[in-house]
Image 1 (cartoon, rainbow, N blue to C red):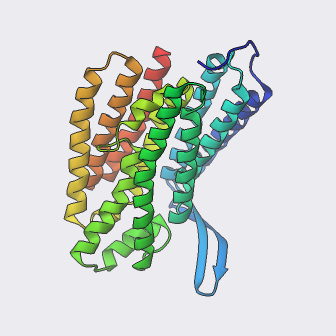
Image 2: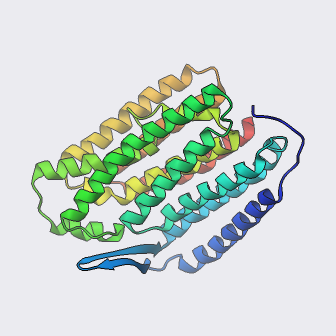
Image 3: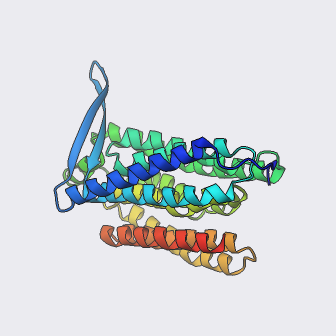
Length: 327
């Protein structure tokens, strides 16, 4: 544990909870309005120089708003739980500040339709995860766990960036909604399709704690338990959500699709066996998270996007309840 003193919740904690509650209520109203409606895009120009025109696109659809609602609802429950869990911690204000940054990155990825914006938010998510895992930085084991988790996810993120740069250089649009039309009209060499798909798989593999980048989620349990709840529910779900939105690219290459099946299958079986051998129930649940997300990888590899989304929703809610029940 960190340095302890009786302090009680700080105003920043109540402010964060109030803002999250308002976001959750607003998301509920918006979800009712867009349910059954076609997706809409909000495009904001960011940089226009010569032939370079960078825009940030936001998608308003039942899927994106539903993902946003899931993130805010889980964050609300976690922050209410954290009031009691972090009550006597000396840096509770810093914790809730990091949680707000963490939630903002998750919510942005949920509604973003821009490849560049989504990657930037993914980097924010990785950085905030590092700070939350290393929250009790006075302990050497905590510092080691935060470093290992950060470096492991960075491996996947860097390869993902290479794939995104390559994707835009081949004429693909900078939005996820354009990928389906682009994949149906383009004709790249088979090797290029395969390498492009493998590069784009790397990022979600790290964020979803899939083999061989799966051990960071176990080590990340050294951080505060409320942050661990968000990692095992919302963070891994957002990583898989990113993978689902890239599915049209994977359908171009049989190698990429087979790789998803292999990664998902190996992780589902291997992480389940590791989970059985654990004596710490929180670590067991972390490995079970990796195993469950392996099923999502298999669904995406088979092209069943709706099944993958259903698995994400069921997992996020069920795993949050499990963590709350043992805390």
